[in-house]
Length: 157
Image 1 (spheres, one colour):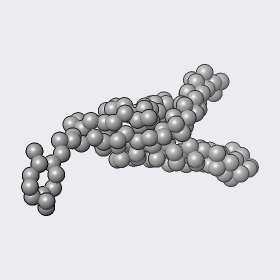
Image 2 (cartoon, one colour):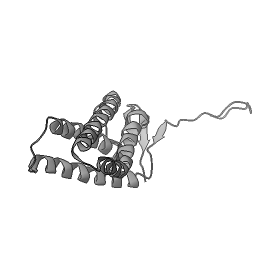
Image 3 (cartoon, helix red, strand yellow):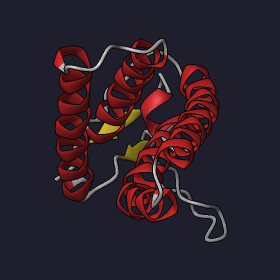
Image 4 (cartoon, one colour):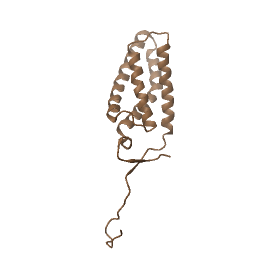
């Protein structure tokens, strides 16, 4: 009901609507490329002619969770809780550091051109690792619109 006071702020019956992020196409492409790489790595580990080490099952489990987190971010699905994804980022960072360190040490011991091989591997996989951590970070820390219970989300285009 309008009032006669020109200095009074107008009333609004709007409910808060949080806009879901747009333009997730590139993230979806990244997710499917990443998933194919991870599945092919897991299959080659399990069916390869080399014996499995104790690190391989841990790697498969950790990266299974990483793929689930990237899927949740890309397709805006609630999977677990934000705290779990924050812990997973730390675990994955420690695991990747350990795994890359042991792989580099093994190369150093067995190969003459270990530094060149490791540099090529690092150059190829660094963008994938960066995007993986960025997606998990955005999912865990910057997706409040997804985790809030009492807000309506506008449909993304």
